Picture 1 (tube, rainbow, N blue to C red):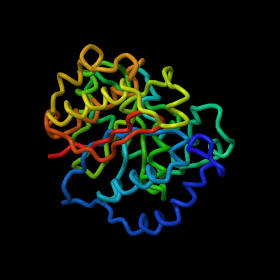
Picture 2: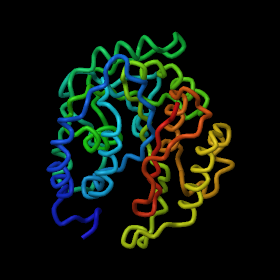
Picture 3: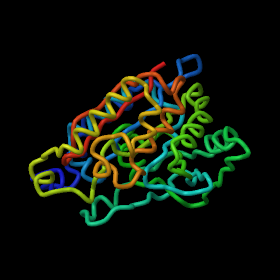
Picture 4: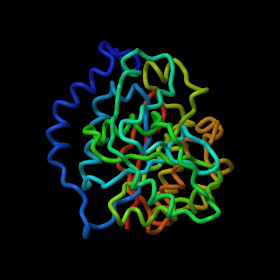
Length: 293
């Protein structure tokens, strides 16, 4: 059995919760006077994450390394919408199950987070007149948000909002991230959620069955790690022309570009980042990182 064909769907998640929930209850909450939280970029996975025990624990341990945030604002690859939009803030807003072909259990999962109306008002106020924010009345969190957050904050006790990506232009996304920078000083965790390599059309049997890593995935990952380690935002912004492994690593830009919201929200977008998760899932780099002061 593999993470794509588990004997018990989400069985690894059930086992993960046995150890994670007691620790989650003990996590200290962020409070006024604490340092600002970092901004994160994470490779978010999909339902198979719930069948990958080591990856679940990596995400959870990452969250545990910080105080529990006062709120979470997440930009997912799976919501491209202009004008800039916020998901519905009401508590218990139904999730978006934007995937197909999986066991019915994954469509029955819930992530009932608290009301996020106060966070919605704060985000809207942070945006300039040139970026009006539309408050969506009913849209819930898509899998780019709720799947990783169920691993990171399994108690679902932190208000969560999703912010749409109104553009794939790195400069515009950096500017949006910069507007969100002040939220970090209030204990809000700003997250860009994508996947460091996302060449779904080019998956092979060897990748799925044996975890073979194609050169276009490892080469792109090495290039990204080097640019991030040097804080070279210009190089990252020119990924379509300069990165090895293109266009196979990212046939569409949506899973890479949330990274620019993360960098924009950093104190210094050009500062080297700290990698928190690396390695591969079915041959795709799942590199994730956080900004540093």
